[in-house]
Amino acid sequence: MTATEAPVTFESLDPRTGDVVGTHPVHDEAAVRAAVARAASGAEWWGGLDAAERRDLLTSWRTALVRKLEDLAAVVVEETGKPLDDARLELVLAIDHLDWATTHAEKVLGRRKVAPGLLMGNQAASVTYRPYGVIGVIGPWNYPVFTPMGSIAYALAAGNAVVFKPSELTPGVGVALADTFTEIVDGRPVLQVVTGFGDTGAALCRAPGIGKIAFTGSTATGKRVMAACAENLVPVLVECGGKDPMIVDADADLDAAADAAVWGGMSNAGQTCAGVERVYVLDAVAEEFIAKVVAKSRGLRAGSGGAYGPMTMAGQVDVVRRHVEDALARGGRAVVGGPESVQPPFVEPIVIVDVPEDSCAVTEETFGPLLVVNRVPDVDEAVRRANATAYGLGAAVFSRAAGEEIAARLRCGMVAVNGVISFAGIPGLPFGGVGDSGFGRIHGEEGLREFARPQAVARRRFPLPVPVTSFSRSAGTMKAVVGLVRARHGR
Image (cartoon, rainbow, N blue to C red; front, side):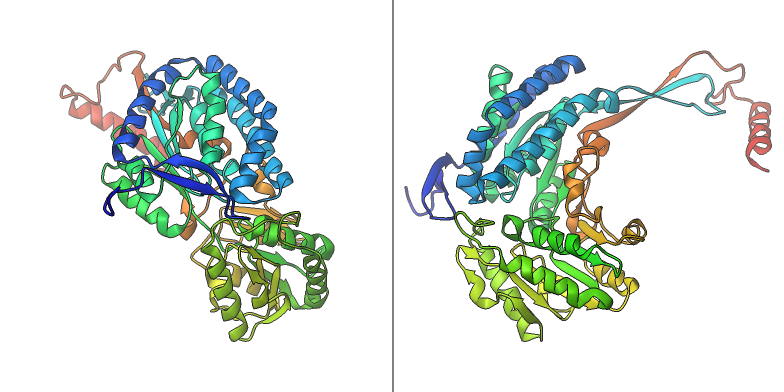
């Protein structure tokens, strides 16, 4: 191979050890286009099934995933380094979402009658939901099963075929997941995987025949995905990162709040887009809350057999280090860990208090086990600071009396009240953000409709005695219509 030739394969590595765990092809533009073309034929068959037939096959897939849960979890552990039970939890949640999409698709996407209104009373109106055909799904590495399944399962339930491009860090997870479905549909190309790097994802966005792209990843990459899709006016669903706040009110259950803050900030090595990165705690309870967070955080250890694993993406270690150093240089105080906690590929828990709001540890997504805790005088200031970011994905609020009231004031897609990330585990709730966190929704009814295009149908039941939409319309007809509208709507 010459220096100018692209590699034809790449290796998947265990981030804990650097050991090779798999070798996968780098699919070029021609290979991606071929996969989309095959998916189009698969979509014709899959979309031609009735809702009950698709439901039966998806139910069989759900059963197969349960049967192979341990095998799939082992692949997740190999490619992400996360603890086995975290991998199991991810699969359990994905299976539950698949079941919800399977059992609700027919009702949510079925033909819906619409009242025709006064002027079109001779029409029968309805909305039907048609599949796009082929959906391209570009998935992340931090939750390589649960997150893309929020698109894959709902897209399949809506009658589409899917071409899935997993992260280059977790290609084996994507292949293993798709293989379980291929067995259910006797090898038909309804769910296919293409592997590679950014060029492979870009080729998927530009491929003729793609009906829609569902992307999860960074904001910067999401913008590039949108630009590639714009070439062919391909619609996109974009779920990007977050700088998720938690607000702790003066009447909060501080034990529960501290436990949630530590779990939301440290689990999965802090690599959770909708976890907890910033905590705003009211002055009245700040000392007690911080003491509880410190106690819980100091009991955690990163590493094999630890509470969480390594940084899956090696380069993310440098981001965490930069954020820690900036927070401390600007006057923040480390109460757990510090720069010495960054020991690639692992990062031990870090908690820094009293960090200026213009520090990059507050303004940028860290995506690591760093928790910033700042005191605020009241809830109004907590809300102001929580909203003072371009991101708007998830949030958490701890308050016995005003949780939902505070939640309603937050600019974000999801809020957990007296809990953390709980919204992601409820299949009927939509998941997605605003601002730099993206747009569009997976999960729930909104998630099913995201992968179907509405088609409006108006059918004439009988002719009107006086035509309105015709050149045979008379001046007297329009006078009567205007009079009717004035009588109905003018008072």
